[in-house]
Amino acid sequence: MDSDLGSSMMLFRLLPAAAAVVSVLVSLMLFGPMVLYLVARWRSHRAPIVDPQLGLKFALHWFSSSALHLALAGAVVLIFTIIGPGPSSMKGDAYRAAFAMLVPAGAIYGIHAMLLRRTNDLEQPGVRRLFLGYNLVVTGLVGFVALAMGFQLLFAKGSTGGGGHMAASAILVYCSAWAAFGWRLSQLVLGDWTGGAGGVPDDVVAPGPGAAQPPQAAAGGGGLPALGGGAYPPIEPR
Image (tube, rainbow, N blue to C red; front, side, top):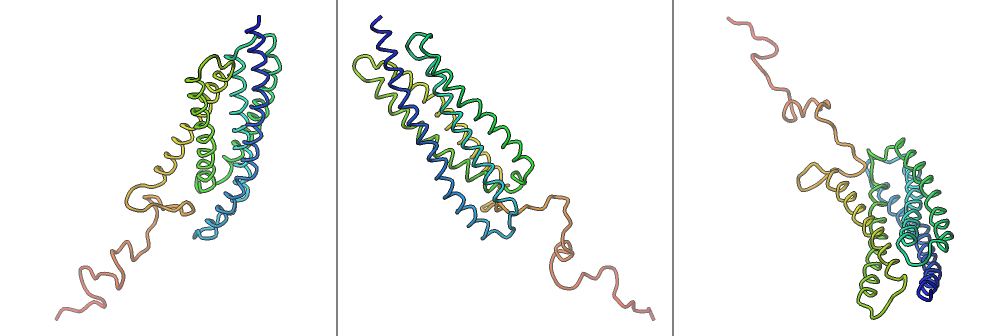
């Protein structure tokens, strides 16, 4: 009975800490992308082709990324509630808090992901690349902190209450997201370039193999066209 009471008290002590982590993530998603917007505008100004949908894509990626991080925090709370200590009768509030984050996050992410498909996000992935890198950094930092806390609790002396379960939940969610964002970013960066020392910029669409070429390029160089089979004007034979 005493151990169950102590575990329940540890559960309620860790909930404010989880709320503080959510607050930090929300602050990062509110103020961090402002720097990304300046970078995107600077790159668009230097690009040979101006992206007319830059602001729209940035707003859609901003909201979808914020919803994604809210869903990750909700997943941590949900997994901790499932595997954490304490009687199931006292976990109702934690379940409701987890689903209160997961449901709106899933709805917002789905709507904005659907709207992004109607833009030129695939043809000009500069904004998508910026947000993938930013999400990789955020999830990597949280996952790294969760790993450090998890090993501290693993080698700690005595019982850690629900701290180990919270660290394990955060490691499972954020390290998985860390790996997923890293894989997607590497695929995007390496998949944009077809080979060689340099690649095609984000805002330049390379012509396809069947595209028409300039007449001079098709002839093999500049200057006058090659004379073939005779002269012009024709010379009458004597």
